[in-house]
Length: 457
Ligand code: CTP
Image (cartoon, rainbow, N blue to C red):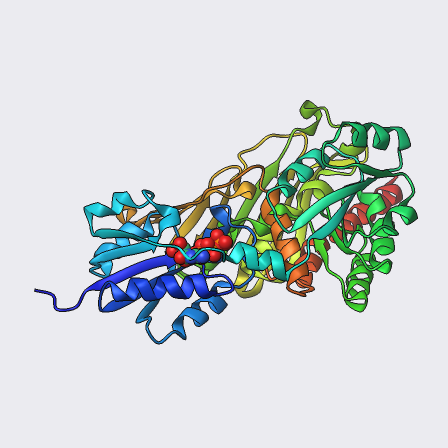
């Protein structure tokens, strides 16, 4: 017979408050040993909790500091609870009564207890009271504008209220039809002069630099479609201007902010696939079939798409040593490019992008003991597989993925602003510089090729 009763409970415990403390005390009173599962930030984000202020580490520390808590674990995925009941030989599962019925499936393993919740307090309420709503404006009226507005509705600390575009009639039509955006501008200075704190820029790549610079000078935080600038000097100038102005400048490379993508990077670091030798990622899209105008395609496949594979390669292999391009061009712009880079310890990155050839959009990270496979579309990471020579050892991770993925990026942008942070760990300035360098180097390579062809003639 066991002489001590183990109780387990789970939660986010963001900005630890009285309601949490009451619940934890009630849980402990049910037995002798209390285990608290604190949800991991990527798991929270994947289940739609996008506005948590404190990191997993901070929340774990706060719970560990409570003398009546005996053990703290981190909850990383949905199926973990059932596994924990067996692993920790749990007798009682306790949780607040806002969850009544949700965990009845655990009755198969343990006694389930729904405890009374404390009225009038919650992390949501504290976040609302402690942080102001961020007012945001949109720059550009493109195909993805509506998706951005729709996705921003899921991020409770942000309010998109204005739009700027050069085309006065289009802006007027948009604000008339939009139930959310009521203020439209065709004068950028006037738009920047309103009480918005942040802007999202989605225009043609060539316009980015001027629009970003003005916004930064006006003291606005900027989220801009990737690439931020087509020139290395310009990018560095903008990043240092953002630093000087004490505002955030972030590239809208949405993959970098997905919960599953961040979990993938964490899992790889554990070393199960051994020493990493190669990262290979493909991103192709037949934009012409999706009725994108020629002016969009003329920006070139590398400019439009390489940010995604470059992100994966850079995050895993780090700075590169050399780079080679195998491009295919049409009317002076690239429609396809195979980009091979070398990194430290002779590791290799293989990025394939195309706008006029369709390929499987998957990614593979190869190591000395196994590999990770991310099925297409890998840049909207939902699941990934760790595979080994001995197939019995293989395992899979899958995450929930809501909407088109933009909400995770918007949530990180808002959360950084609120926490007074001016850089993101998910996409740091040095990540942005490295990712852009691929584009800059390709543009240089193209220029050199042009010159040498002229000479040959
Ligand atoms: N809890 C409680 N009383 C409250 C708030 C939370 O008893 N006023 C309990 C929950 O029922 C859960 C645990 O505390 O068992 C952790 O809840 P969590 O979701 O982290 O806290 P909330 O304040 O509800 O967070 P949010 O507002 O982000 O949903």
